[in-house]
Length: 620
Ligand code: AMP
Image 1 (cartoon, rainbow, N blue to C red):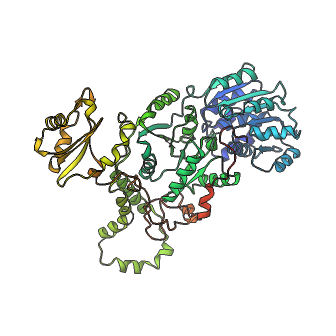
Image 2 (image 1 turned 45 degrees about the vertical axis):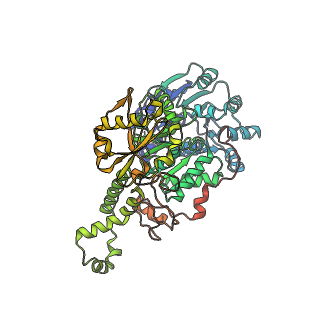
Image 3 (image 1 turned 90 degrees about the horizontal axis):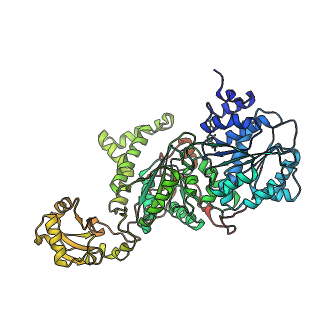
């Protein structure tokens, strides 16, 4: 059978190289764009998401079109971030590994410019660059673009978002007029349209999927929580997904750092990636994430742009992006290379409008999801543990010598008892954390304002034998205490004698009810409305059995008090190939099931801020 890349017009050397990378069939974008670009005489606009195989879509045709006997730059690829620059360079080097004489250079800020200049002097045909450093090198007259035949503008929308418009103008003005320009963008805002209009001559336009539409492999979910419960909600989502390998997006560098530090402190295997880190630190963080030695990457939009890590299971929008269009880029970190992924937004009730806007942009509906209860988390973690125990690889040679002693130790116990004990070893810890876990879901209509005054009141103690309940009715509904009493009794079908103290408030109230009648009351209140509004009763925090206050139970998690006293070694993780199989060292410090990367404390501080540039308009 003829290789499908060959059928598209790619030569044997390159076909063999992509075969070695495991590319068996072209992706849809490759199938559509390779034949067009191979003609070499068109300008081109490709509306495509990241993760769709876009690098090969332009990289493979370039390799066919370039004259590798000449050592002059013939193709310039501009992209927004250093990470993307390195990825593209690396990909093209891989595609051209059998192509004799092919030289590619990565030109980006934050790295030694002398080395880059040396590589350029030695002769290159393909330059992959971020705009700032490229301009610097052009300013030094260290590169000659008179032989450039192709310019690729990759993630054009992001370059413009980052304020590179002028730099791009300046760079393009040093390239010949008759070059061909190929533009790729995930979205097509008017600014990108303008570039296409100004720099291109009747470009061939290809849209992979619908305009601005997100990857079809991605499910979109949102959780509504009170603003103060965001972190607890994040932890609960992570705890409910023991195998998560995710990117958490925050709006600012400070938030990114903050969330990462909290997660690390709480025993999660996380780290921060943002513009205030030195290049070396960013590389280190990215490498650990790529190697899956880290489970959660907490990142700003800019820092995470162009991250090409396959198998990311979840993208979590800890805060929604200011520019709604950025959502497409964020969610595009998952569902790559044909895999499925979940993009989650943690929002407060005021942000639902933004979710609707995003839905319009991506052309897909979000699922409104409920945060799992503490019990759900415990159950999920228990079975993840059971699964892990079942599948663990036994090192027969090493364990053999200890078996007699182990058998001795368990001699008194039945198989069932041993199993119970192994499972409980970890399970108890989660049970302990989640035993008083509050419901973190905020209902849309409650809004933030209603919350504030209520915290202490909700936690107030009820009288012996009574449960204190919250109801979303109060004096603003023209209720007196008597009205409320009869409303509750009539709809709850209980006697007035079962009702204890009533605290009438503005938009809500509290009342006590005899413990024995609580269940009946809840049942009878299902579907009850007042003035076309659903009536809600809930146990208060005290009724839930736990406090909601900060420093009390704040959403479960790994550790309370007690220092994290170690973790498994990085080697462990590497050989384990995946998560969650870890032995915890240093006793039960209260961590969850998640294992730790084994980094040293200093290492873990790699997220420290170093001062410096702002994320936006950052020059490469
Ligand atoms: P890109 O959109 O270029 O960043 O590619 C996303 C991921 O898909 C990268 O990990 C590529 O290595 C991979 N990829 C690209 N093309 C193919 C293909 N034809 N078959 C399998 N994987 C691919």
